[in-house]
Length: 409
Image 1 (cartoon, one colour):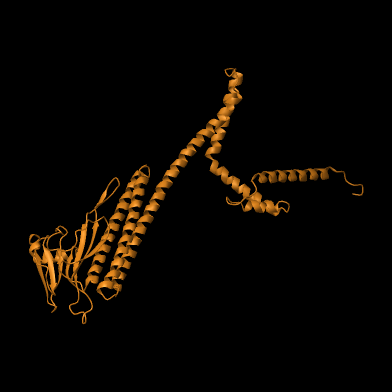
Image 2 (spheres, one colour; image 1 turned 180 degrees about the horizontal axis):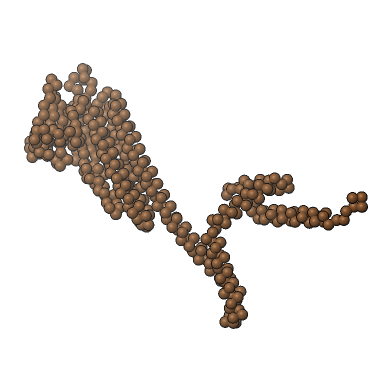
């Protein structure tokens, strides 16, 4: 880690760490003060060097090559240009993670990681007949970790690992944000009308994250392929593509989890709103049920002599009885409905045992909202038929009992 290098040698946080390796595999470390970076020469010959730079260091100093590109948030910028007066190529990879202020009543601010860049120099083989591959020499990095890479593909793979770490941290902070949102939702018991708007903003943010991730992966894969074609004799670095694929898969799963959590909480909030709406409608229904019978009763006694006791007293008694009966039925509606369906099941069962009613009973038993079935009025018809049949049997039995005995008997 870069901080460990500085701490081990007692250096400032702004000092640049330079790791170098010669052709003889001799390695060394030294430190460059930020104010001295402009005087350091980067013409290193065959030495392979890695400069670990603080985020506070000015990238446009004389030490660091590469184009000065204005970065858009979350956009992976990759560029390549030919060094002035030579055959070397300078490759620059950069990304900016801006500060994120996720909106809610108790904001949790994601730290501003600002910009992270890596730049390295690719030099063509000095003997094309002996060495066909280009060689990476000077490497500049703003990552928090680093080692002298084997080549440019290995250096880019380090950057993808850093990118994955940043995304995982971002998703962790987003999950913490949703936890705070959840506590806020419970504290308000779903009664805050602006909560759905906050959740909608969060859902939009996760969609933007997914779009940014897909764009980064697309650009990274394209660069890996083009790098292999130009600098490695058309050999695609498969290990780099594998790291990119793992990065995409892991971060996509986390963003999907955020989406699912968000959707679940939106559904819960909408359910609470629907429940409150249903309760309000039920209250209005009770009021309507209470006043409609009274209005009906008042219409019956809408005559001029309402002050007469002969008219007033029956009206008061009738209105009271009808109103109380209505309230009793309303407040016990669940019990009444349960009793109704129990009796309905018994009647349907009896109808299925009766040959003349079997077909209709079968249709009534298989009733559902998505099927056209006979109305339940047929149950009343069957009940009347049943009662009439019972009465008829009792009548015939009485006639038999009232008949005089035969003479032979």
